[in-house]
Image (cartoon, rainbow, N blue to C red; front, top):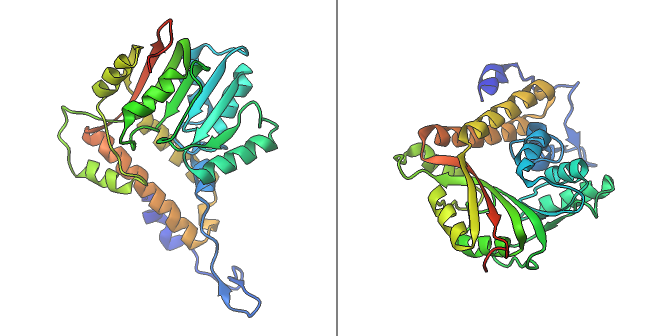
Amino acid sequence: MAWWRRGKHEIAPVTAAQPLRRSARGAPEPEPPLDAATLAQWLWGAGFHLPGSEEHILELVKPFALNPAMSMLYVGADLGGGARAIATKFATYVTGLERDEGQARRGMEMATLQGMQKRAPVTVYDPDKLELRPHSFDAILARQTTYTLADKEHFLGVLTQSLKARGHLLITDYVLEPKARTGPALDAWRRQQQRPAQLWTAAQYSECLTRLGMDIRVTEDTSSKLRRLILVGWAQMITTVDLHGLPKQHLLAIVDEAERWVHTIAALDEGALRMYRIYALAGTGGARQ
C-alpha cells in the first residue's frame, strides 16, 4: 500500500503505445481480471496460496520424520505446492485436500504437468461431509482449515480417527487470545474473510484433541513468524514483478489483496488474533472416534 501511494502518480495513462484491446467491432475491451492464483504465487511462490513457501512447509513437517514407507494427508493443500515439495523431498505419498474447487482443480493440473498426479494429487473436499478411512495415514498437516468451521470437533474427529497408531497431527490455524481485548482491527479482519471466522482459543483445540485421544506435544504461538512471512512475500513481489507494467485494474486487485493482509497484521498486532501451531500424536491404538 505504501508502494501504491508513492508510485501511483507515476503509472502512465493508456497511450498509443499501450493500446486497449479491442473487439471485432473496434470497441475497447477491458483487461481480464487478475487471476487470484497468479497473484498468490507472485507473493508466496509457485504452487502456493498462503504465506510460506517450500522452505517453510518442509520445516513444518520435520517432526513427522517422513520416509518413503509413510503416507501423509495434507488438508488445505491449496495449489498443491507444499504437497509436491514434501513428496519430492521425502519420496512420500501425499494426499492433498482443498476446499476451494478452483484451486483444487488447478493444483491437480499442476501436479499432472509435473508427473506427480499419483504421488501428490489434489482433490476438492467438503469439510462437513469429509470421510476418511480409519487408521490410514501416518501424518496429517492441516493448514488454516478449521477457523471457519462451526463443528470443529466433528472435523477433527474425522482427521484423528484416520491416523495410524502413533500417527502425527499438525494444525496451524488462527485462534482467539482470550486475555486480549478485542478491538477494531479484529473486526476489520473478520470482514475481510471469504467465509465467516468462528475462532476457538488454543486451549479449546488442546481440550478437543485430548478428548479425541491425542497426546498434545506442542502448542506454540507462531504469530510473529506469520507476520514475517507476510512481509517477506510482499517484499519479494514488489521487487520481482513489474508492477508499473500492469493494467490499472490489476494494480487495484493487488492493493485490495494488500489491504487484506494489512488487516491480518493489524489484528495480530492488536493481540486478540493469533496464529498457533499445535502438534499431537495418536495413542498406540490410534485416536478415538
